[in-house]
Image 1 (cartoon, rainbow, N blue to C red):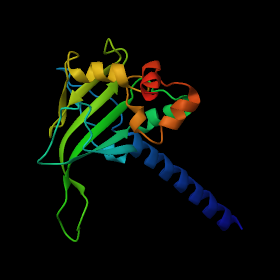
Image 2 (cartoon, rainbow, N blue to C red; image 1 turned 60 degrees about the vertical axis):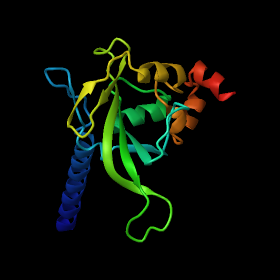
Image 3 (cartoon, one colour; image 1 turned 45 degrees about the vertical axis):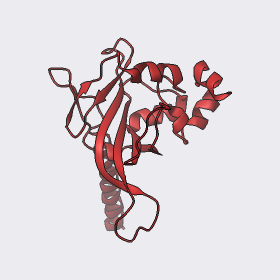
Image 4 (tube, rainbow, N blue to C red; image 1 turned 180 degrees about the horizontal axis):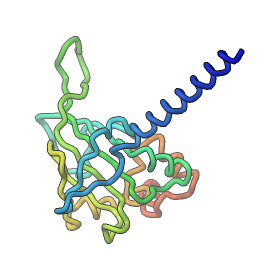
Length: 198
């Protein structure tokens, strides 16, 4: 009896320790880290974060054309921010959204039609850091590097997100699991609501 009790206790300790390890592993690398010259360090394990959506050949400009190639984009968010959004319908400070762009491949292996994702073509990160940025949010471009420079606030992405975002300068309208949450919490922007009625 004593041996069984000790075994159960030991198993419980191991399971709790393993759960703590997994939580630490998942959350490590999901903190904002900057270099001394204000570059953002690319979170190394962002593909282990919460997956939000994929787009195919998306463009926000009617004149943009890509006749010679196709692209997928995948969006991931740090787990801490996702949990808060699920509860409140808005993003907390220190939210990190990673947009990963990959080329679409049509011919390969046994594929006969359609496209699958190929090599990464670039990464862009959208971060909410209220103490650091006057507008609370900033964009960083990475390409294939591990350090990203902040995209100047005069770039079109800032005004586009400010004018068309469904929630807090983010395109939640393209995140099918989050849009219903924002609707239920009443956090959709007036601009998006008016735009979606058209």
